[in-house]
Structures are given as C-alpha cells and as structure tokens.
Length: 128
Image 1 (cartoon, rainbow, N blue to C red):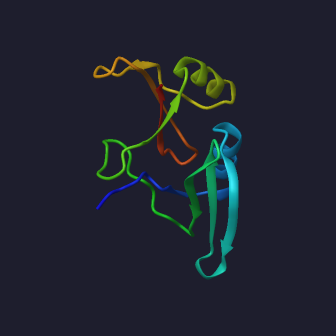
Image 2 (cartoon, rainbow, N blue to C red):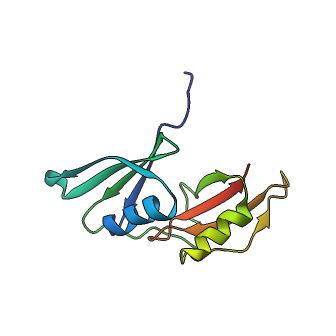
C-alpha cells in the first residue's frame, strides 16, 4: 500500500459554532461545505487551509470530554507550519488566545509553541 498524504483530520466540538468561528476567524481556515445531519443531530463542516481540504469539524450531542493531562493515548496534537512562530503567537495573543511560551525543538532547532482550540484540543505552531 502507498499512502499519498493525510486526507483530513476530524475534530469533534462541544459547541460547533464557537469552534467553527475559532478555526475560521482565528486560524484562517475557510469553510468549503457544511451540512446538518438530522438523523445524528450533528453538524459537519469541511474546512480548508490555503485552499487544501484539511479539517472535518463535527458536533454530536453530549460528546465525552477529551482526556488531557497527563497525556492520553491517541492523537496527541495537531501541528500547523508557519513562517514565524513568534509572529503567529503574537497574532493569536492579539485575538485573545492563550498561548504557551515559545520553545525550540531540541531535535531540529526549530521554533515551536502550543495553544488550544475552544475545547482544549492541543494545537501546535511549528516554524518552517
């Protein structure tokens, strides 16, 4: 089997509209399509970054909370590449997003930084 690329990442939100606004207005994604699935009482939005489909945003009634600390098994975080982590961090702070301090990846020497989406999903900025 030959994998070509990651097709999408699925994110379940406790408040679909709040998370949609975060991914669109704060992170700069665009909404490609959106559908309400009445049989599941669930919204599903397809979000793109720089024209490339990337995130499937869902809502479901009463989803369980995501375990956070200590780190739980499974997907650890979602990382986005940026030209300047310092500049991107300043922009996030300006939009009221809590951010961790800048770090340097000890293996690559690249700048990096963590923050979270409205439901506490860990997100990372990593310098190109």
